[in-house]
Length: 322
Image (cartoon, rainbow, N blue to C red):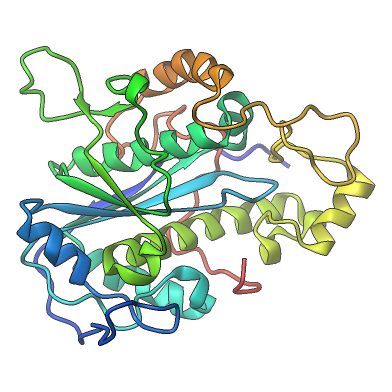
């Protein structure tokens, strides 16, 4: 079967003002997984002076194969309540997630999904790859003139920025920085369960999940034995069984300890503060970012190495819990 063509580093878009949607504000002081996210956190941050906010979330961190993907949804003070049904992508069915994508894209000021390939994960480690995918998503919205004042990141660890790498992992500005270099990544605030509390983060998780699922369905058609159309590259029984019988393929993360596959190296990078991670990240990330171009040009190779280019809304099949 011919090799898949190299794809863009992600998808992106910006919108015109959209019509309001139904309210989804929770009534309790402490949102729980059963309650809907709202814009309460975002509105407070905007009152504090961060007018243009980006919600960001990742999918695919724990998969054995395929890319890690990071979604970003940018909102300003003019956006109304998020589209009805927006919540953490893990709490939605496949059908509901897919139906929400065009509504989220109309609602957001700008949106994008960035990817880091399995090869990049093997080369620089999962945390640096998350950062690279997040930077690609920010680069995509910046190419449309949208630079957020603050990023809301799900979880308690800021994997998007690192003090000793500011300026290396940076996204392009408007060219008016007087030659001082790229605009650095925006400030980040982390929040545990932000995807269950913040509409912008929940919306970002939906975009990232749908796009990565579409990529894995396409790769699953190339390699049907691993069951990726259903498990999306995670450690489901049929995936583990195929690994034991066939070994890894081109799209597996070979730096990981793949179950049932002896002799592969241990994960290359333990975490974002590991000295080996920094040594690998600096030349690798610089090389990748130096090649980045306008994300609207999907014909340029190398922007998301080795990932197939698939339609954003590729029809999906399979389970809804991966």
